Length: 292
Image (cartoon, rainbow, N blue to C red; front, side, top):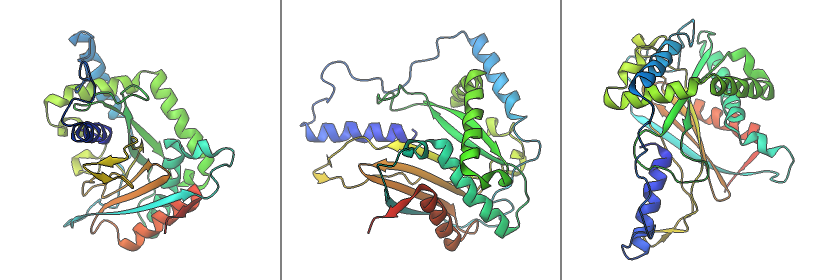
């Protein structure tokens, strides 16, 4: 269950608790799992093979991450900060709410980390989840409702966030137009029936476990939920776990007027001081103000 599926489940539970255990949907229940792909098995098999072939070409040089070569990973940690927009009425604010802008900004923070660490100057490879549920609708709660797009850029390209955001946007547009995201979704559907490691073996550098440079996601707005189990909801955010490699991930979401930023990391991969610097770079770039 991905973050949005988790939100759906919380909403259902809250409605059941509030409405005296009566189903909140009145008539027929919603689709808790996605409908099966109606295309013939032969066609889906072709698309799945296309996705796996594509993954072999993602990066000529295997990516590195803060967790690369980490001998003994420590425990999983996370830090959450909430912010408000400094000038919410400024024109152009919409651009900063797109995942491409946020990824470009996180990329700038990571390039700074790479430079301080002396990590190899090889291109970043970052998986981006693409939610397949209907926009504006809860959609299925359980099951794999995601496809993946793989963003690629170099540390040098992060100096101009606006230009990089535009380049990342073009990458995603091309992937949609060429049917690559659809092929990745089909491959993921097949992978529901076998270990995800079967997918990872096709990624560059996956044999060493360093499949990606870092993680980044925006899980969008938390659904309007004023109370849960008799308590008023003041904020809600996700704190996803990350694997020892890449060892760090940066995640966004919003709840009411709060912009939440969560850094998840593995002890030994990065330090608390480095996490604090990433937060500051993102805060400055988003023009956010900390909530006291």
